[in-house]
Amino acid sequence: MKIGLQIPSFNWPDGTAEIGPRLAEIGRTADEVGFDSLWVMDHFFQIQHIGKPEEPMLEGYSALSFLAGVTTRVTLGTLVTGVIYRNPGILAKTVTTLDVLSGGRAWLGIGAAWNEEESKGLGIPFPPLKVRFEQLEEALQIVLQMWRGDESPYTGTHYQMERPINSPQPVRTPRPPIMIGGIGEQKTLRMVAQYADACNLFSRLGDDVLRHKIGVLKGHCENLGRPFEEIEITTLSTAFIPGTQTPAEIIAHCKGLAALGVHHAIFNMPNISDREALTTFGREIIPAVAEL
Image (tube, rainbow, N blue to C red; front, side):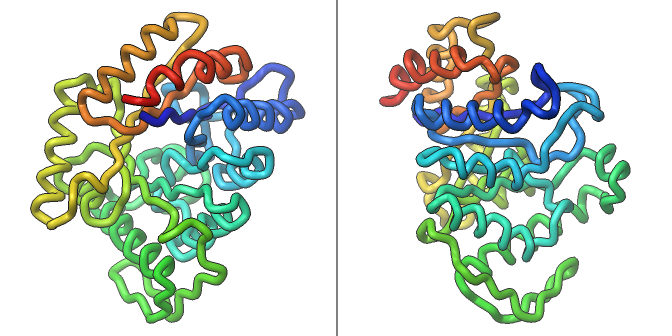
């Protein structure tokens, strides 16, 4: 099992001037202690179950580019980009740039978007959910076309491109992996089976729901003729050590996820700026779950 780290907040002691140095330390430490992946949210306002909208929030791809410069091994992505935030052609170029500059370590994490508050706050169009899913599918088609080097025109319902050039192409072969976030059974998980390399599920849903969602994804793969084994199952959980959890409890949690078929467990941490908490993962947890 692979272990990832999500950075969901930048509301750290010592204020704005300390965000850069502290983020660099988190990135370097995660890289050194063995985390496989490093993620930031793609939000412009802090989201409600973590903090207040006005709390510090960095733009996701700028933060990932910064992290690419202070790391050498860990993979990098957003968990996840709302499709409405960026034109798909620009998104393909942005992720390609991250991949080239990081030496082939970029992910594309993407979803249908949900945070209407920040969209209204910043003047970003927020169409109905049905339209956002249509935009998501077209965006996936565009990104895959551009990463194939296909410059032919794209004509969709929501996006039209006369010549989608993508030069340079990504370093990672055959391309950066695509993760789709969300649990919708009819659209989201079907798009995972059709277009993506990974899904992302919330571990807090519980074992029964996770087992069901993974089964639905497997069914979509069978219907589309896609080998289910090609899909990386990832989850997002919270870890608080030292605090409300012990390393043994987190290891047990990972073992339970592995039994369900999860390959990549991503954790956010309320005390992520505590270097000792990160090194505990590297010293005790990551080696213990590596063979799961």
